[in-house]
Length: 69
Length: 69
DNA sequence: ACTTTACGTCAAGGTAACTTTACACTTTTT
DNA sequence: AAAAAGTGTAAAGTTACCTTGACGTAAAGT
Image (cartoon, rainbow over all chains, first blue to last red; front, side, top):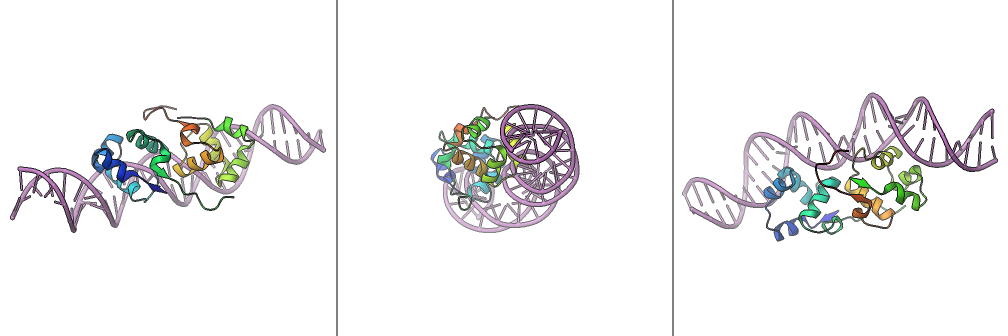
């Protein structure tokens, strides 16, 4: 799962801290998601997409679980 | 957070059990998500959207952060 | 009537997402 | 040069997601 968070965040002029505050999560959460440590919850993914005025699919690039069944 | 899971699932002719098997999750998980007990993880949301050949935004309707039930 | 299929609840337990706090490094600003 | 802003790591704790298993009900097939 790749994500365009760092680019989008910079485009919108947010620091990690301000973005975290805007979304109501911790800075650690932003860092961890940007670094791919784990996936955001679906609500947080929606909030992120809304913040950057786009879709979840545009922010997060899901490459598939493993192989298709 | 509403979702169109039951309708989409029926449209594609899946029982809860077969859908769960296809996605590699338990039937409980499908039930809980359909009933709105909790939100799916982002990867699972992607898998669901892919299964129903649409977008996450079409399957799940997010109404904002502060929502009860 | 009985078995199967489908949907649902409840409960105990594990793991992943998220939190808080603290510390370290680099770059920018004063 | 010192402070401030921005990014990063790590540890320990809480909560949300997901699991397995048992059980109940009702509809549809033998």
